[in-house]
Length: 88
Image (cartoon, rainbow, N blue to C red; front, side, top):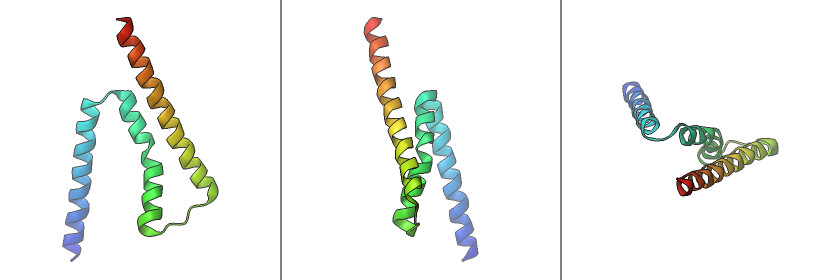
């Protein structure tokens, strides 16, 4: 059973890393950075949901601030890209 657990752990890590490398090759640096920015809040959310982790209010506020910042960055990036495209 330990061999099975090790196999799953290694293969899921390899698979996730492979997806990450492919995505970084296709996406722009700003989009990749925004996605990596959301890793912490989603880890906290899934920890709370799946493992019943208890987060303090300040941790939820911090996660919300990160998500809001990511949304603002995406909105600014898309509006900047639209302005650049229409100007050309």
